[in-house]
Image (cartoon, helix red, strand yellow):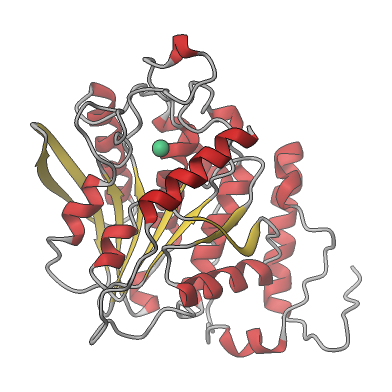
Length: 359
Ligand SMILES: [Zn+2]
């Protein structure tokens, strides 16, 4: 192997060996891996990254696996529909709780009522120290009302990407994260009632599970990181404008160091998503979302549109970001004032319009 490096960079052999293993895995995945396969086997890390690396004398032998995450996505797809109140939603929620428990997380349900529906957020808790919430929504959209064929508008969204992908990342993170070693408390949270605003279910608004949790927190989290619609095989993840800017920079730098070019450090969309209620409480929160997805809220949001490689890019990045001490996330939320958020409704609907025009 050729380790040729630009003169101004340093090589970390530990990262190199990790990367080699990952490349071998990506090679096994064949064509699916194309968008994330780096152009070169060499890994060039900026000098500064060396000082950010954790003092891991005994790095965990297992890392986040896109293949294993994909299995969790496929498992959720056996239940269609999965919008709040359906049998599939109930069964999928039970599956999530079982998987979290099986990986040694203390599971909890947070029930709440919304518009006459009995809803539940699902939590896996573990560790001691400052609290970080990592979330994804597990409910799906009842109506595929963005489908190009109006005849499909009353069919449910299968939600491979817009639902299953984020949870799939959570569930393999449950396998690899060791909050005890990281010295922090982590809650892995599957949010309910995210995706039926705007006529999904009559009278519903978006992001109700995260709103309930953020307004009923028993303790102040240090930060909140969200993964939503991150499985697209054709992955491009841009900065999201309601997110905490320093957290975005910290996460994207890790992705760059891991050679994931699908993380693009430029602003593109402003989203109503499950990070928003936390940001409104003054909690540093960031949304990892790939909104350039032509199958958004259509019946074509199916498993063949997402890839293990895309799930792995996000899962590995989150795993490594935590291992480096969550660069960009403020050390404490004490004294944090609620942030001035962008006029998200107008901005988001404009973004969604432009998205639909492009596709
Ligand atoms: Zn959605």
